[in-house]
Length: 459
Image (cartoon, rainbow, N blue to C red):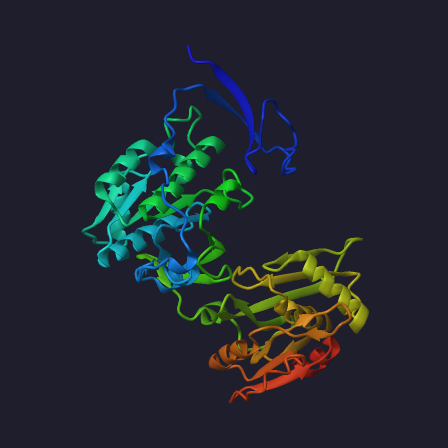
């Protein structure tokens, strides 16, 4: 009878120990160790068949194929990937349940087949009939798209060798398993072993492998952290469940920019690209200015994006005032409030402050600082910023407005959408071109920005 052993594995870093520990000694995460039963089997290592016998090559002698990238025919997806799918790469797509991961991959598979590519779609969570229903709804007709409902990695490998596809989609990595491991599907050992096999498969067979990953309640990819290290590209599918749009964001990309964002809108027949995202986020922006509402120009990768920031300031009935943020970093807002109080003289110690980015967009770059400060200041003093004014700038602790990058692109995007005035840092002195139809106001300090763009509210 096979000897059974038990060990504890950290879900975050893969650290192994013989007994339970409340805190992982490797990554210092509490409650991350899970118990796994390991059985001593006569193993046939999964990746022995991928033994690499290549000799070292000089960098200058390596020649690239003209078809190193495959376009998905979805420009927003190609933007996030850095220009298309790279042959022999391993791509991980993760997101909340129902966000549209399977939908976009099925759409991508259908479009790749129209480009004479052969795609094997391995569904470990849905039956053939369920996928056919979705394909009919999305109006996908493809001659070289193979659907394979399977969870066994060895059987999947056999079909890959028979079909010889250009692209393999695994939906999802948490649901497949290898017979060489005694643990159940979704465990740390299984995910690590299956991902390692798929990585070797992609590199040695020059097959592009796209893997779907589940996320935890905290929004992190389920399984060991090593999963993200092994793949070439990590893409998160984000979106507000109360809105129809979706954001595709790369957090790791060995073949492109990691700050690019693709924007889609979920419709009846699947995900549709949004060619002008600024219009999408401003379509409900009122032309009648109200206190606490400003428009900022943020940058997502190489794309400027105009979004609305709203602030609400009011007297608090509690001893400690509340600070609530949505879409911006909480500590950053606290820092801006401290600058407003110290450098501008705006007393917010007895005021509740709420800051919200309209549409559920997450903004992380400092260029939104000035917009947040003006939204809070105008609401606190019941004054308005003209609805045709766009705000751009980073705030320093001494109240100075610091330079930001790509200011010209941001202003041109605002000008395209009909904005008449732009507040920018004076430190962006290298920007000298005059853009017709928009007034450019340069400011050095926060107090200058407030005085240059606000007016008294309607009496």
